Amino acid sequence: AQTVTQSQPEMSVQEAETVTLSCTYDTSENNYYLFWYKQPPSRQMILVIRQEAYKQQNATENRFSVNFQKAAKSFSLKISDSQLGDTAMYFCAFMKRNSGNTPLVFGKGTRLSVIA
Amino acid sequence: GAGVSQSPSNKVTEKGKDVELRCDPISGHTALYWYRQSLGQGLEFLIYFQGNSAPDKSGLPSDRFSAERTGGSVSTLTIQRTQQEDSAVYLCASSLTTGLDEQYFGPGTRLTVT
Image: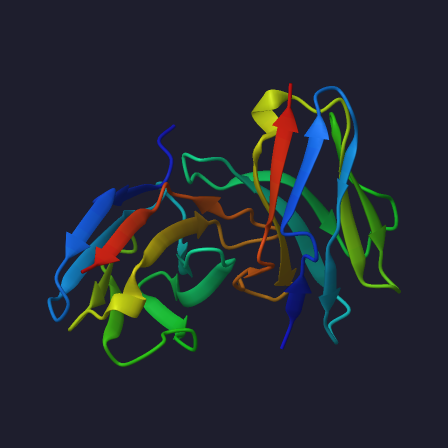
């Protein structure tokens, strides 16, 4: 079974600064995907960024980037130029690559507060 | 286009009553997932549908929980004889079936059992 661990229950960052959220995972699979989801107070889960395990290049989406270390099973999220709208719960998630769809395995989340 | 919708948005029920939670996936999405998010916890997988069939029911916490999907579209999650520990946000997601398919989430139903 796969597990995802987010060791930082809460974090805060000043507006315009950079923050890094940690995520580690455990799996015996070699072919999988990793995701970061954002959940604002509205409860709507929004995909922030995704990484395919077979790709060595770290994924980037505007102000969001990841540091994917496959051997270490680490998948951290860096948010640059933090904005007030980034305040939310952030969940790291794992999905085994399969011929069909497989469910996401989530960490317990990190609550990020961006301070003006 | 329309996203995943769920109803009701909030539901308060008395212990022992049955509840039904509804999910309308994005049109054309054949895969549908139910997750549960308890207070302070991550999302816990409950059940997954491919079309109308549920290949993976391993996450259902007890036999009080059941789900169905008809016409490859709308899904209903039913909880019988609700208990206080069932209080949580129930999230539904849908995705296409091929390749790397992003799961699109609905806004969830907050269930409170009193």
